[in-house]
Length: 278
Image (tube, rainbow, N blue to C red):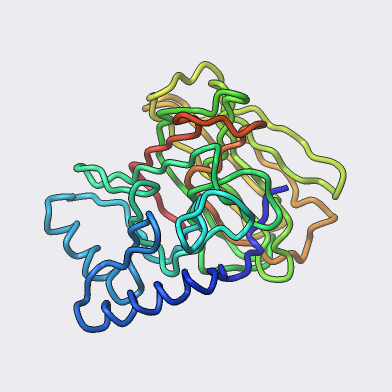
């Protein structure tokens, strides 16, 4: 079951000592921190990296402001267990989140990786820092994505969510899937029941499509998707009665849905060329 209700990662004693040493180095050099095999930007370095990316010529760089980043590794770079690291605030973290020359974000989530406590699937996913009570505020997540790779066992990747937050963090209310060429939205109606709304079919790998997930602020939710300049397919549904009053937030990126962890490069890859939440 997907969840955004994540504890802070707790590295082992040896890893903690290494992280503290790296932190001391960072304060004196302003450099990147290397934790195990994972290179990440700390909060103090993220702004400098973002400015560097803009000056490198990414004229329309997808912004990371307002997001945290869940990674498919733990704080020491390990790829097992259920203590997935969370980078607060979000920043590029090679090889899992990198910046393309055109400013797009390239997400990689292997099927072998660390997970969150409430999920069986590794992810490289942005999670919104802002939350609201579903059905009471007009909010929209809009993105343009293309799927470069899907996990071999299911060919299914979740690329956008309206997900529970805070005490409601175990509620995957709305999930937008790319499922072997089908773009569909799953809405959780109750603890034991969901409804699937199909939006697009025949969307090939490396084919860009756009989607929106919207809370209309009046007790309804609207989902759209389209390929290129084609007509958008739209679905509007009521907020499920079981989840009225739930705190939610947006999530976007690469939440691969492999049914088995296959080695040798299996996983999901998603390139996001446009992302806006407001």
